[in-house]
Image (cartoon, rainbow, N blue to C red; front, side, top):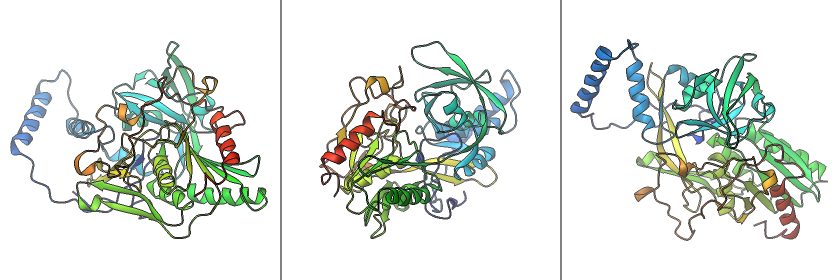
Length: 446
């Protein structure tokens, strides 16, 4: 096996997000694959015998390589929800999805028990224009079933050349299945949106962590500060419905609100997976400004890294509802001429040692959505709800014993926020954050 490849501008990288349609990886760190014990000859013989029987007796001829690819996908995908084998085409597609611009329909998805589920529709995308909502389940594309396919195959069927149509069959709670016709387009992800709120309170929403996010964030802060007359009375970072993205970017974003210290650590079986990612000294762009971070059940991975770092550093008050809990690291390990493995190799921990995996980030102040701002008949699915989701035990167990485990989801469930409400003057969670900053200007600052 070859060395794990450098990418994302050569810096350390590892998956920090639920896979997106055309967007969401953090890469791999360049560690040579260690020598492992040879495979049991009896196991290899069993696989070979099974493949021969299939090739000989299956009702239809099997294409060369089809069984090997299927065996690899089955082997990896049974480990946990995020490990998988990618053939060469899938690997190339993955490598092209970090620039913040891609061709497709513009949705972020996960696969829950074999069913593709919408996490969010990217602002300005065909999916957003068509009214796709968090919690929608996509059962078919152009009449072909998607249920039971791995996430790379779902992505392949939904992506396509700009201008080409695709018809999705949607299962939404409370109504019969229905079809939605979309036209694929070049989706330019503006990952940062900003607005100055009343009382000189800055508001920035990050919808995904891509290669441009950190630069866009700094430019947005500078522009808002100018609008505010040179200084903020408070600041809100909105990470709701942000399914993640690049680890490097998450570290850069967190470092823009920290003066030093750890942002996130990783721990795995191999010593090289035990890493500490620090913020450089004197990096806080808003030093002394009280700050709130908004999260919800669709805030995953990179979003949770940022929220956890600012919470542990007491730099910001975290408000909203419990985050998704995607705290595992997937390394991309190329196999020369045969694609790559996406393999879970470590778990993420906040600076104090709390595990993100299956736990998520619990807000300091829980702010539930009013019913009229929820996506009707939709419930959030958490990482801990996914079949095969990892549990941090043994050497991977959390080290911060002073933090109680997060409370269970709300008795009525955590409902997705209506995208049309998010960040508007009607947004109850945003209103709560603004009110909190006005009433507790010093409590929200470290």
